[in-house]
Image (cartoon, rainbow, N blue to C red; front, side):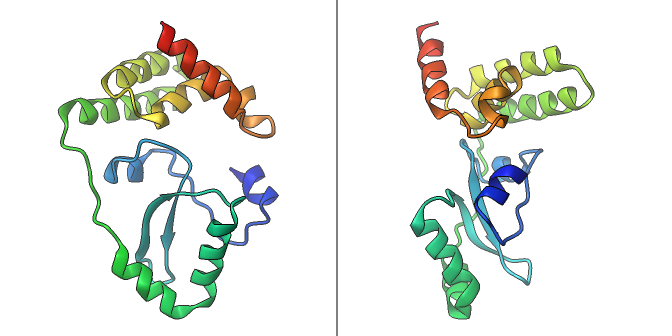
Length: 161
């Protein structure tokens, strides 16, 4: 995360949800996403697709930082968490978490097995897709810019299988 944060000259704190806790809580299926928390520790903006290269994202963040009334407006628009009750999604999330733990203790093959089982249960979960791809092909994610063209080709290849 640090290289992208620095490249964007971001002046805000960036946290990485490496255990996908918020992803599970809000039933998120894609990354990156942003969450805004005010100085009082309150969630003022539900998870949203974030791209600091987009002017509208920067404008929103700048307004939030400079206009105290905007914080209240955002607080009024926060949506409650929408954790999935679908048993397949719940199992997929559990298998994803197990995979993270396995990877952390050096069991990459076992982690990949759990993530593939998780993906079979929740095919539209891009967090799982990208975790598999990033571990198998770190050069497409961590050497400079993320290769979105490669991801699109990879997705097409997987559809053919």
